[in-house]
Each structure stands twice: as structure tokens, then as C-alpha cells.
Amino acid sequence: MIRISVPPAFAQKILQVQRYLQQKFPVAYRRAPDFWQLMRMDKPIGILLLLWPTLWCLWIAAQGVPDFKLVVIFILGTICMRAAGCCINDYADRNFDGHVQRTRNRPIPTGRIKPKEALLTCAVLSIIAFVLVMFINKLTILMAFGGLAITLIYPFMKRHTHLAQLVLGAAFSWGGLMAFTAQTGSLPVYAWLLYIANFLWTVVYDTEYAMVDRSDDLKIGMKSTAILFAEADRLIIGFLQVMFLTSLSMSAKHFNLGIWFQLGLVIAAFMFVYQQLLISRREPSRCFQAFLHNYKVGFVIFAGTVLDLAI
Image (cartoon, rainbow, N blue to C red; front, side, top):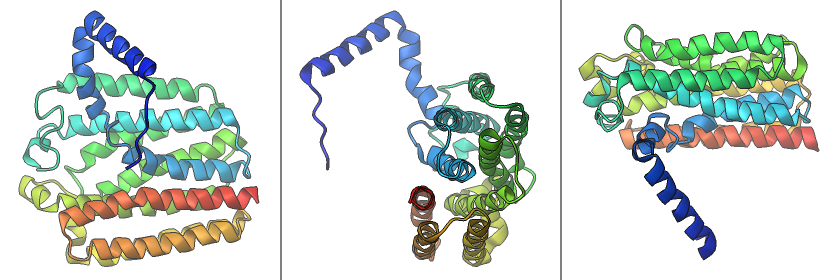
């Protein structure tokens, strides 16, 4: 384990700040961890899954030299929108999370945060994200409305359809399209290939995620692709993984991406084989490992993109 030593003077300063906040803002200080958990800031996996494809689209759109201002805006915007999505998701699932082993200790089912507070938090985060988009161009601002709409719709789809993961795929892939409009002021046709790729990948990892809760979801009447696919879940996930890699390979031709990008895809293919091994027995803990493993897939493809465009 890597240990980082903090200078005593700096550590003392941190303690002083904590004491000051605790004394001046006791209620906010006490409740801050609950809102931190509501926004899933303690679990950054969702941020990474949303961020990597957005950044690889931004790098491709900029041919390897993205505007630094846009990099900052998309990183901050991704953090805000993922947090907002978690808030509206927990609001939508407020009557169900308490019956699921993995989610029963979340802030709303335990009563630490009221549903109205979750909605307000979602609204504030969405406004912050929209303010960030205001520093880009008009087309990207218009695109932001579409992304927000899909984000807000997704959590409620689990009541009505087994295909909610497809809606999440549409939402999580929207940032890549916005990266193109932000960097270039237009939306080239082939950007949709990247959108389709990320859409397929999102369905893959969210289905793996849904496999974790499948037994609980069946009891409480929640729907998911994991339930819909049933015994064919591994086969369909494998097919979607192949289609994801194929879509990225096709996009590489149109965006002049070469050996380093293709190497990233090869590594990602072996990583998908590892995920198939993890979910082979459909054990919830190993399915969750497979889900978490996808942030590494995203990083590998992003790294391949950066290297290819830089060398």
C-alpha cells in the first residue's frame, strides 16, 4: 500500500478548517456526507464510465489537440451531470431501494435525505452544468437540452420496460456528440459511429450491473435487460462487446486512427474475455467486478486515442 505523508503543519491547517466549518455551519457540516453519498461522489466509477468516451470523442474531434477550456468544461460538466443523474435516480427508486440489498443503505431509503432535497440537488447540479455549456457555442447549448431530457427520463423507465439500459446508453453517449459540436461547431455523420459504439458499450456494462440485482429486481417488479436476456445474457453481452469493438474499428478508418488506437481495441478485446469469465457463473459479486472493470476498458481506448493522435 502506498502511503502519502502529509506535513504536520498542513494537517493542522486542515483540522482547523474542519473545526471552523463545524462550528460556523454545524447542520451543513453534519449533512454534507449524506449529500456526497447521494451524488455518488464516494463511488467515482460512474464519472469515469461517462468521462472516457466523452474525452476520446473530444480528442478525435480536435485531431489530438483539444481546446483546454473545453477539456475543463467537459470534465466538470461530466461530474455534475453524473451526480445529477444519481440524484434523480434515487428519487425515482425511493420506494424500491430499501428492498434491494445493495441499495438499502442509500440516503433516501434510510431517511437521511428527503426526496424533495434530492430533486433540489439534481436541479442545482443541472443548472451548474448548463452554465458551463453556456461558455461553448449555440449548437452545443441546444444539444445539452437533449442530453438533460434523456438523463431525467432514464430512471423512470425501469418501471415500464426491460430496455432501460438502452435509454442509459443514449444518455451516456450524448456527451461524445456534444464534444464534436463544441470542438468543431458541427456534427459530422461519422461521429454517430462513435455514439453507437459507446451506446453498445453502455448496454454491456449496465447489463452486467443489472445482473447483480437480478434476484431482488424480480421480487419487487423492477425491469432490466439482465432479466429480459435471462439465460442468453452472456451471449448477448458478448455480441454487444464485439459490435462495440467493430463500431470503433470502423470509425478509426474515417478519422484516420492507426496502430495505437487499434492496439487499444485489441487490449480491450482481451479485457472483455476476462469479463466473460467473471460473469460465467452469474455470481452477483463477480458480475459487479465485471461492471467495475469497464472503466479500465474506457481508459485503454482513451490512451490509445491520445497516443495515436500524438505520435
